[in-house]
Amino acid sequence: MRRRAAEAARDEEFTAFVVAATPRLRRTAYLMCRDWHLAQDLTQLTLARMYASWSRIWRTADLEAYSRRVLMNAVFDQRKRRSSSEVVSADLPDRPGHPAVPTAELHVTLMRALSTLPVRDQAIVVLRHWEDHSVERVAEILDVSVSVVKMQSMRALARLRDLLGEDFARQ
Amino acid sequence: MPEHLKHLFDRALDDEPAFLDGEVARQVMAQGRGIRRRRQLLVGGSAAAVVAVLAALNFVSLPADAPPPEWAGQPTQVPAALAMIAKAEPQCTWPAPDAATDVFISVRHEATEQQRDALQEALGADPAVRGLIHETREEAYERFKVLWRDSPDFLQSVDVASMPESFRLKLIRSSQYAEFAATYAGRPGVEEIFGGDCP
Image (cartoon, rainbow over all chains, first blue to last red; front, side, top):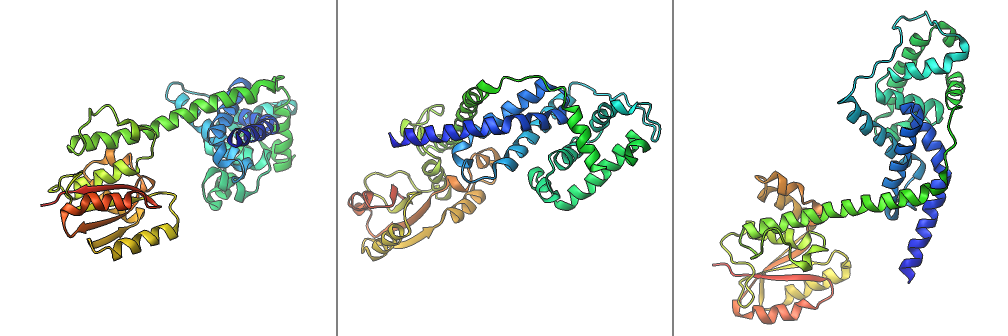
């Protein structure tokens, strides 16, 4: 009986976590994959994996960081599976300094430029500049060193600047 | 640039379709239970691997595809420990239910320090016992890795958590084994007792 009650309490906390975490996880997933349905699937997979370990993590782990880590691993796995069957080409001219895009479309260009970066660099940019996590926290989530995050973050931003052109850099 | 980036990301997210999240929790809980079951099967699978090795060593007479029911739901500790002593002392016959020269006692995972110390003290003071050795799970695992270094698949199915803490000892007279096992079987902290007949 007491076990039942404890399980019910855990499930209730999990439900509350799902309600609170789903929208943000889905948006982060979308920025990584640019497909809302895939983002939804990756979010659900993340939450399901967390539920499978919920009795271990629910009171102990830093759930926010943990969920980002599970999500990014799901994104990386998915990318690996897809890249073995399909070649993705981003139709961006690799010509720095000449963006033929009106400013209104800049966010579209940004998303396309992002997709040309290595997937870990994309994760660093999204976690750092959309989610607003600190360098230390990004390092923790991705299980890499702080200096790797700093270096790749700089490299990624420089590349985005190149792809988006000087207009973007000055804004 | 970073503030600008955040603003652009927000714009990119503007076309988010309306998701009905009401059912998400229920769905992912069902999916999560499936994942948990598969993980448990994997753990059960490693227990089966250990039992299969034991069967191959003629340590237990079992059809290799059927772990004995009393082990099926348990962690791998006991079978893994058996695999180790069978490998370490191939000249001995394990288990020897009636007369045993050597004894292996595995300590329960949840045994307290006091229970373990009391057991060690009792064994050390027992006039039937000689050559008492205590082995931690870490020491057991190190020994296990050396003994099974040629079987990487089997090694992979076992980790330090699969190894029990244990006491090993010799009996002064092998005929004392049945009485010895009966005395210690019910003691707090004792998980399993196995006797081996070594020439």
